[in-house]
Image 1 (cartoon, one colour):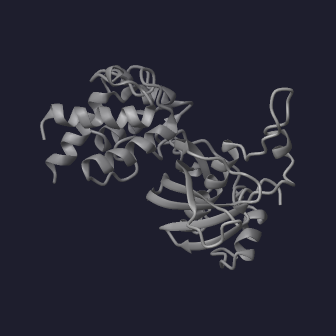
Image 2 (cartoon, chains in turn brown, red):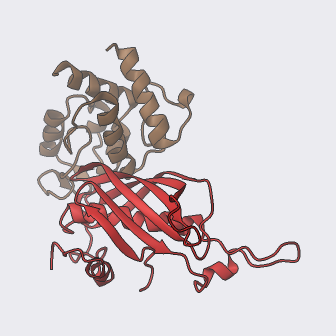
Amino acid sequence: MTRDDIFAKIRSVLVDALAVDDDEVTMTSVLTTDLGAESIDFLDIVFKLEQAFGVKIPQGELFPENIAQDQRYVQAGKVTPEGLALLKSRMPHVDFAGFEANPVLKNIGTLFTVETLVRFIEGKLAKQ
Amino acid sequence: MRWMWIDRIVELVPRVRMVAVKNVSMAEEHLHDHFAASSVREALPIMPASLVIEGMAQTAGILVGHAGGFREKVILAKVNKAEFSAEAVPGCTLRYTATINQFDAGGASTSGVIELLDPAAPGAAPTRIGSVDLMFSHIDQNMAGTEFPKENFVFSSTFKTLLRMSGIPDPQP
């Protein structure tokens, strides 16, 4: 499957999950701020990606989880260096470069663009 | 029972499917306002679609809760689709069939079909009047790490009474 094929399927998933128009979904669209995704939409997107690509996505593999409750990883609303290291190792499909300077937890959703999803699916399919 | 929009569970296949029924009654007060007579039309008592969706949410929500042994707090998070082709009128029975599509630690997605059974036409096949697809969240597993009260306020005694009256053993008695 080419990158364009993957993008087309992901666009279809996002149009369905977020009720956006086709042309709103570009590689650089941020799921939260550009496409209006809220927290529950992330689970919906995971379910729909699983169906669209025939893959299993364990909880926490695509989007982060279980770090907010752990003081080693989040303190005073910011992700600690240890937390960042954990996220980077768990999520190689995410570009953390811009986030590292001011790692406020509530902004973590802005790291997820359409391209992040494309990279993630490319990685999943490559392992099949 | 307050805010129960299903009367009885008639089938439960754990983790797969649940069927529940709701008898629509003229005694329900909201039907007198939905829609009341006006100067230009007669009264038209029909069950609001939002409450039909709530009935499906309760059917599917119990199915999802049961799948997790009622340990999770299962909250309706999203109505992915709701389509209706006919109204639910008093004197008829709504039949909700909810099916789990996907289920994991974070929540579940379900699809549901709503049919109308008309007692005036015994033996007639149920009429499909709509479909409702839903997303549920296990809210203690939320991404933001927000904490909620420990007790399971979702599956209260009201739901347990419904299970018992439907002859379904409570997985957490």
